[in-house]
Length: 104
Image 1 (spheres, rainbow, N blue to C red):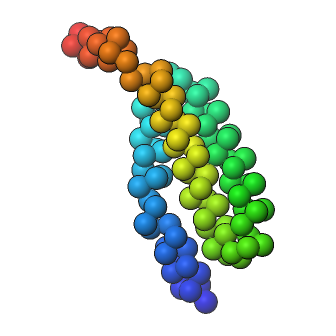
Image 2: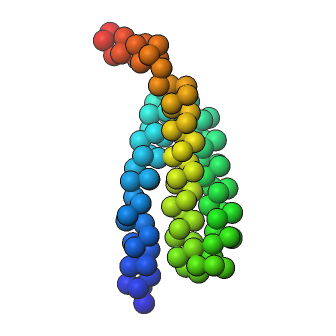
């Protein structure tokens, strides 16, 4: 029975693993800039999303709903970090400053 649950989880998780990859890359980048509060905010919103999605999806999809809620929370977290990255750190001035610091 454990294998059946693992396969059910993998069927939802594996195709969307790139969402978690993007989430972790953005977390690492923003954390490296010293903006730990931004990462904390995105993580808290992602966690709240996971709880809400779990309560909403389990009655509809049972165990798959819990698996899907996890992936949805990663997506919300990644979108928040991506928006913050694009709006705040993806500027020419910021990139010039970072490149200039790397050249020292």
